[in-house]
Every structure is written in C-alpha cells, then in structure tokens.
Length: 368
Image (cartoon, rainbow, N blue to C red):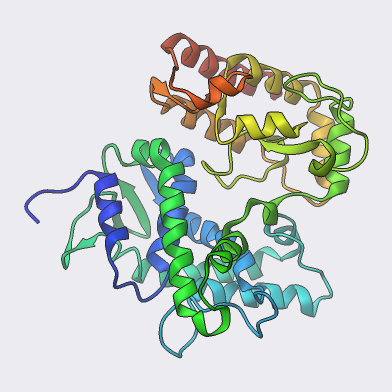
C-alpha cells in the first residue's frame, strides 16, 4: 500500500475482508465507536476497551432460542473468544452466589471489583495480542489508519476520533451486520439460515431492549417528570409502557453510543420517540432535558440507587459535548420537535452549536 487510507476508508477495507476467523476485529471496532466520544488527549488504555468489550458481549453468553450453550464467535473447535469466556465466568460467579443476572448495568454492581478486574485483565491481554496488533493489517501490511499503540494504550491518528464520532451510527450498522452474518454462518447447524433468523440473531446480539431498565424504574422516572412527556408536555399514561402510548428515549441515541446511565433516559410519547429516532436534540429540547437534570438531581440518583442502576451524569455530559462538538454543519441528525426536522437535511448553524456547548458547560457548573 503506497499511502495511508483515511480512517473510514480503512475500516471499510477491513469490513470487506472475507477471511475473518472470529469476531474479535468487529468487536474492537464497535468498542472504539462507543468509546470515541469519551477519549481524552487522543489516548485510550486497553483496560477501557476491555470493559467495553465485556459490556458489548454481556448478553451474548446466554443460550440462543433453547440451544445448549452460547453461540460460537470463532472458527475451530477450541475455546470461544476470550471476552465471551470471561462473561461466562462472571455470570457463573453471580449464579454461584444466588444473584440473578438482569443486565450488564445491574450485574456490574453485584460483582466484586477484584473479580471484575481479573476478567478485565484477561480480556486486555488477549485483545492487545489480537485484534489490536492485527486490525490495521491491510494486504498483509500494518498501516496505522486509526491508531498506533504502545504501553497498553492506543493513540489515535489525526482525524480518527472525529471520523468515528461523525460516522459512528452508519459504521455501527455495517459492523453489526457483518458480525451477525459471521455468527449465523458459524452456527448455521443450530440456527438455520433465513431472513427471520438473521433479524432475530441481530436483535439477540445487539438489541437495545436488552439494556433497558425495568418497568418499575421507568414508572418512577415518569413520576419525577410529573406524568408528562419532557419534550412535548403531553400527559402520559400512568400504567403500561410503549404498547399503550409511552416509551423511554435515549437522549444520546443508542446508535451513537451504548450508554444506559439513568441520566440518558427520558419518558416520552411513543410517536415522539419514533420521530426523534437516532437524532440529537436541538437546543430548545436539550435545554428542557438540562433543566430537568438540575431540578431533579437528587431524585434521579435515588431512583438509580433503588433499582441498582447506573447513574453517571458526568459521563453523559462529556459524551454529549464531544458528539455535538463534532456534529457536521449540514446534517439529518438534529431533532427540533417535528418529523420534518428529523428527516430532512437541515443546517446545524454555528450559533446553535455554540449555544448548546455553552449550555452543557453551564450545566456542569449548575449540577455540582
């Protein structure tokens, strides 16, 4: 290769490779997309990647549709990929201690730090050997189109983090499709191959509902919102969830970032959540969310503690700041409260971006 490709070009070249022997490279790419908005000083320790890999694979360890064990993610008859083996060990710890596994977010609170740290170390050691050292080999030649690496840390090339943030939603869909297809073919004897199975397996591997809080937490959050949609002010039903009219929205869309901290959830109408889709909030709606966070800080934290859920306001704000700061000027991804605004190319003017970034900075000071 005569010259180094741009980050997106390099990733697409990796995805075109038909000689995968496991999901390791695909898992690493998904982890990098998730972590990109939170990277500081262009450096990312391997331990942070390993934690994210454990989160991504948490639901993958469950038997699929009555099968006897987890689906394989590597060719051959040896052990499954390291991260999946470690997830199995951690869930065995929960089972041996009579603790039901609910979700990664809740389970992590019930696993001693020393036990989790050992799994992180095992995944870190394995990931450092492969795929970190092999992800960027194109045509047999290693080309640092995303990162260089040394001392158990990845250092990102110029423009790589912005590319991962900006194009993350589209890249995620491509990577998840490739990941699902590999798992389908590898486990075809168990699964069979048809369109329905493809959709079911992709939902099993990556569906956001597997990382959503319980009905009880949603109900308490709705009470904190005084029974109304935060975005529209519409009265929401006191009982039931999306089937009868209200649902839970990710302020930072799931397609951009797997972030399940309670501060990233808002109860809204089913139609509003559907029209918002994978878009970011415009200034006016984001301000409503910001005011709600400041006014209800203690109540939000209490709900999270009562239901064993994650509360991480600082992380939500840091990621919002990074994502908005890297949003392009012309985009389909800004939702201002109407179907049209979410589905057509609209200008994300510098003034609105500056106002949003100022709002987020002010929010940090108000929240402390």
